[in-house]
Length: 120
Image (cartoon, rainbow, N blue to C red; front, side, top):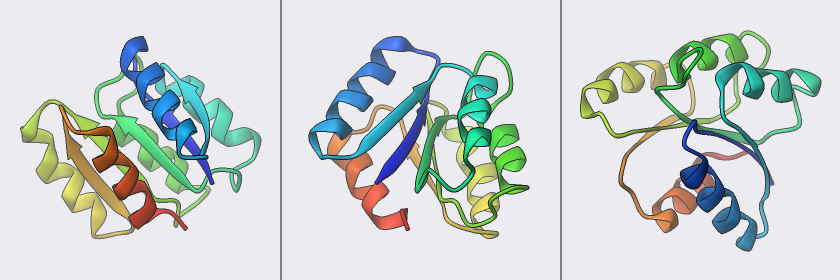
């Protein structure tokens, strides 16, 4: 399974990528929304799930979600955030498709289970 993980914090990104790699997932990473969209745009059907932080330095995770959904309406998204106030907005997005929310800090195993649940 191919997973795109986006987080502007390098240590978190590396930790998630390493852990998911141990679960035999193929992981690509990006530290900005624009970099993530560039990876996605090369082959819109390559990834089975996207895991993204909500707050990114350029475009936020919700804007990235909306941009990607224009090309792939079924691609599951898992949003990560340390801010509970964003959960309600993300849950509203979930009504239109496969969307999950993980409040930081979360266990890596919880992320893996969520990926397994939502991925195609």
